[in-house]
Image (cartoon, rainbow, N blue to C red; front, side, top):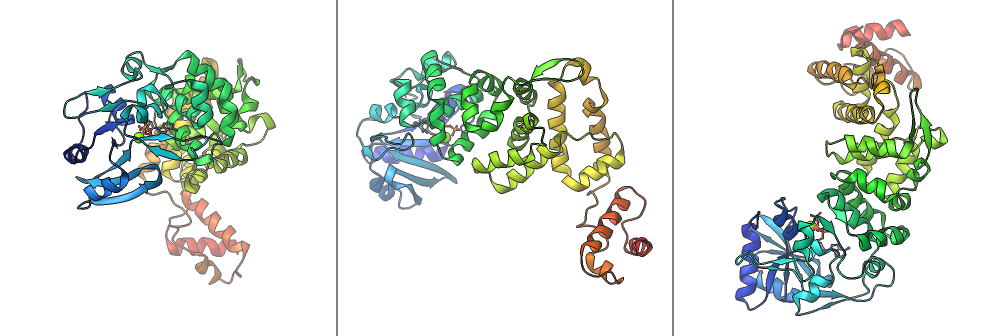
Length: 430
Ligand code: ATP
Ligand code: MG
């Protein structure tokens, strides 16, 4: 095994065994440890019932996270570990969640309920034994995502697995096995029944993964369901001054050029052309899509702001970049430049040679602007609405107009950000 188990996980497994139960590390952490990737979290599977697990770790913090499904979280050695009782999922009636679960004494039954062979292995960190009844090790070697059991049946139990297949294929850069791939295409429509937040959790990982472009191109029907805003782009022929291109393919190609791994930037690149088919800016459509997928509100704001500004031409001047920084903040300008860089890389060479594709030029100016400190904004302007009203301007729209032209003057370096100078300038406007 390339990655060792953390002390907390070993301690939990050891204590469960000393009490006479079976216990193993299981699922994603085993897969990642075999691959030499750092597991996000370590899950433990055991033959002990949840009440027993709770008792056995009563000296530690135990949280009954999903007690009905047999899961408790144990805090050990400063980390938290989900400990889940061996279980079999009951009947699925709605393509989402099992009606009930049944605990079992059989590790193999527990592994059989899991989605993909690479996720259906248990590992003993003391002996290094791997329990692998479905050929997960072989599939890791072959870099393959394959369902445990019949793909159609497994996807009809829980349609989220359709998207998880693409997620693992993207993040691990694995191919999807043929029968599993066929079922992904056939069952894509069932994703409509899955809650937005579950889709989002997988989508975020998928679009920042190494194999995202391949998944987006080869399994369009999946994305047409979870992001119907993208469907009109598929096969939409467009042209710039130099060549014809498919709007969807160019969008995906831009995403492929982006290697930064920031989920906000990646989502903005993916959504940045959704307005093209209707000749709109796309901000509104992007926002609606993100709401539907239950993105956190602050991310919706950031992503849709990037979509809004993505089509705007940034002049290669300090003034223009300063204005942009003042409106968006440095972090968002960095993202916008990453987006524009990715866009430019997806263009043909001739198009890329034109001034608006010169993102490096703007980036250099942006670096200089950043050295000037925080960008001027209404928040750090040396005068406030109160100061303007004190000059006799009645409360209302005019106050805001004066403030924003003062801000422009500061940004354009026509005036110091200093109270007396600004008041003087405001007086001239009255
Ligand atoms: P990550 O590294 O992103 O956490 P993971 O493989 O650990 O990936 P989780 O969503 O954390 O994925 O789930 C943990 C394990 O539970 C999986 O490895 C798999 O065995 C099982 N599992 C999770 N979701 C499903 C599902 N929808 N259907 C079947 N098994 C699942
Ligand atoms: Mg996990």
